[in-house]
Image 1 (cartoon, rainbow, N blue to C red):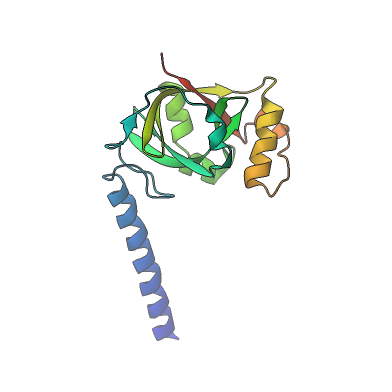
Image 2 (image 1 turned 135 degrees about the vertical axis):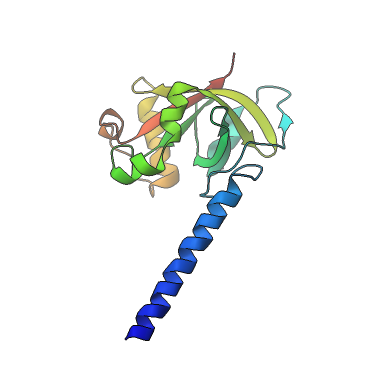
Length: 170
């Protein structure tokens, strides 16, 4: 029994070490490593023009970086009527408060960079809490990530879900 507990302890310790090392290494990389936040973007071509964003409808994730602090992450994305939205869920849960620091940072400094297919777009994150686009954005979130089930509108009003619109930076 002691040997089994020792092996289990070594396995858990090794897993924690691997996750910690990956998390630290990601901070020095050019962008995020899937679920691990990454360093600032060092590659990507500036966008020559503002695109028609309808192509993003079928993208599951994109990368974006805040300018302060300089950290990047992979996130879900929604396009509606030519506008882009990034959701952040679990905002009222203890693990969301621990894991999701970027939404509060975006409120302090909304400047961001969106990177899609090696093209970078200067953006600003604007939190939306209501408006005519909300039902469409919630429906699209449900289609893309919720097995076709629409999200309840109270997900936004309760604070559980935050939605940011990515608007061109001035």
